[in-house]
Length: 76
Image (tube, rainbow, N blue to C red; front, side, top):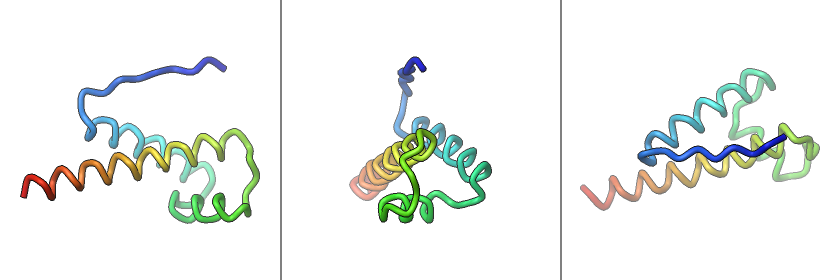
């Protein structure tokens, strides 16, 4: 599978795109991302490609959310 790079004009746009991908994983696996990530990091779940991608997207989501929150707190 070929990797694709997508560039967003803002962190908010990137956050929305990642949140949409997380929603797809959650619907497919019948589990929310926070529960999934906890189980994954505890070694309960396998290292299937879908779980690796989901974990990476969730890490990206957390980083983007933190960045946006810091900017909002700085601006306040």
